[in-house]
Length: 203
Image (tube, rainbow, N blue to C red; front, side):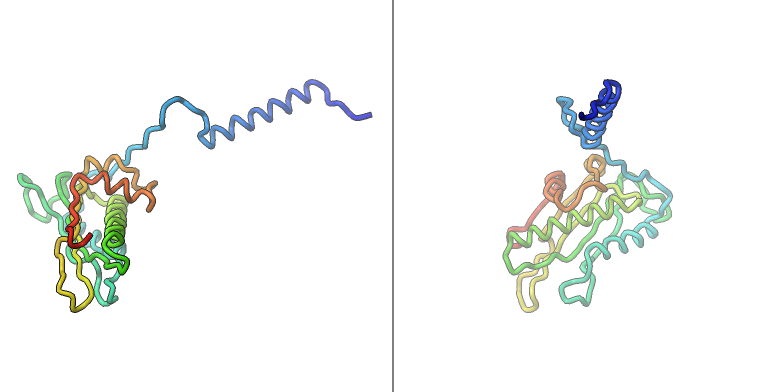
């Protein structure tokens, strides 16, 4: 004769099973609320007493590391980096960086044997990588302007000093969860840029 559990035992087992399902659904976010969950607001670092010279030095290291060496491995792909103070603000480097400031970076774009469309893909990856590294640096970075220059193989007459130009304002950067977004969000960040230009000779 098989042993039949008493009602309290069965009730406890069922309750435990139901609780397990509820916890699992909660952890997986499977409960439908009828509304999409809002993307958490990204909070940028507030203005600090980091002066311009210190900021540029730290940003240079971050951008240089993100971009890596040039194709010939003899130089950095990072060409220029400076902080621009908007009109109406004193330009002295001893003052704290203010929310109106723009970090301006010039860098070398990669060539690609597969053609212009692949060159543009690589450029978008550069833009995303630079923006993410800057906005997750715990430095007072607000607006960011990026300019990519194209230097093809040696001997080619085609040199495009402004092949790709982009601008990311602080108001947009605040809305992007930079730490959660990865390479699969490159297109979304590109679409969020308030200004983007691609020279037709580049892509």
